[in-house]
Amino acid sequence: MEIQGPCDVAAEAHLHNGYVMKRHMMGEYRIMLRSGTYKIWDEYGQKLAGHKGKPAVPVIILFPDRHAMMEQIFLDDAIEILRSLRK
Image (cartoon, rainbow, N blue to C red):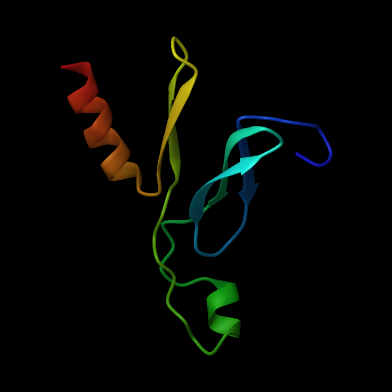
């Protein structure tokens, strides 16, 4: 956001644990995420004394008709939410 200006979602790709955070920034609520991994063991965790990674694949569900967003850190949870919303 500092480089490109305001956006709804900012993502950073990295090798270790993912996260999702919603915070008030630049006059609106913005979602920031780090794209986690399905890898249990990664180089970063091993450098920190053999820590095991936590699998996470963050997903943002968009509702363009009302300019709303819903964040989920786990892909499986997001799939279940989408299934229930489509019924």
